[in-house]
Image 1 (cartoon, rainbow, N blue to C red):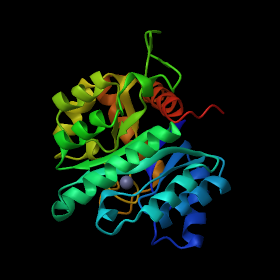
Image 2: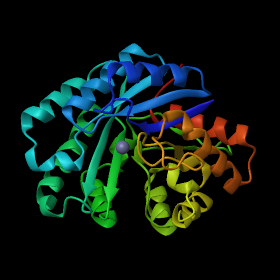
Image 3: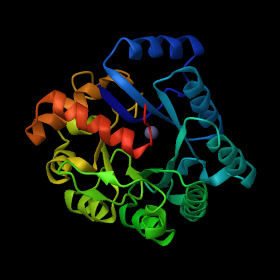
Length: 277
Ligand SMILES: [Zn+2]
């Protein structure tokens, strides 16, 4: 039982044949669920199509910050329409990227705010991409009510490992790359920290510290495939079922059996994305 909480089966360069082959490989693996995340109108449409085709596939729809320079309100309308389709469980990936998009900062902020408001309007979980914009991303999320009590009230309470129940605003920091301290600031706001391939990298010390520090109740497993391939497949194309190697590393760092970590991270994913089958 494994959960890939952020992946791109919808990837634009995949042919329909290759996508079907990948789906077959997923079905032959231990992977139980994927969240197929859009980053443009086209990829979001593909994610919705994938989720209609495969029972284990759920979709997130949204415009990535790299879409900010040319985005239009019509594009946002289309995303909102797609968000109403069955099996669309989140708005994402949305956020800020000042590594590649420094010139479009203002446009990114404008788009990001509109997409958080959309997620609030639709009462959907939010999937965040953030790069070189740690504090700014958090400030915008707070300002737009992503961690508000009102938002927390829209979702069922989360049951922690020790049986306690807590309110959960359903905000996922996809492929979290900040410090352990910063991760804990997000945890105190109620967010989920999502980790992928970098936790297996030799130079992944920061992500290792994040996993060691953040309680298991606040962790999600992901791949971001076809990017960020985990060891031992680094250098090749990433695939959703390679999430096994992320989970194995999380288990090791948390001092858990692999099966226990896999079960808990799958439960976390199902709770976060409101999947109850
Ligand atoms: Zn991604």
